[in-house]
Length: 183
Image 1: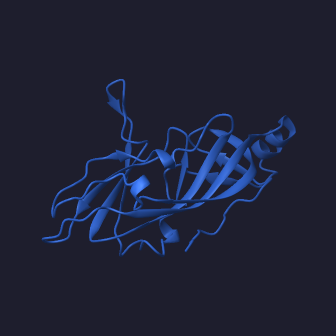
Image 2: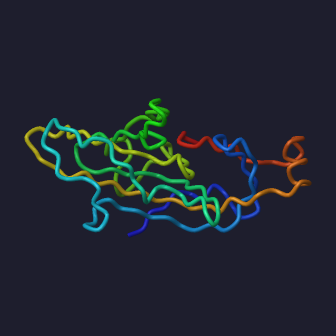
């Protein structure tokens, strides 16, 4: 069973990506599905009632930057009586300064595993992909966290100078992408 978010961007459409402070043209578009519940993609061990997993970087949600720059649009559906906390970019400390931002948490009520809520869709690019920390809220149960990510992978193409002029002057329509944020 494959569930997907509505595709927000189409080839040849223009976007402004906030973390790059740059305009791009959308190239190829591919559907994207990732599930942490399979044995080969299990990021988390079982978590006792009331315990947490600690932040885990989810490398499959890191769009490539080479040979082509990419953008991910994703919905995340979660399972079990757990809270899934998200942090971008990945909770990595750089030069002693923590530049990561907590962007919130999801529960199965907010965004169910088999029917992720479009109100919580997120955008990721290279270096700005999530770390996840899971808290087991289930009384007396040890559970293994499981979440499903569905969406699209967009190729970001450099704009030509005449396209940039139109975008910067406001005569060309574009979509503003807030990486990590909800759109």
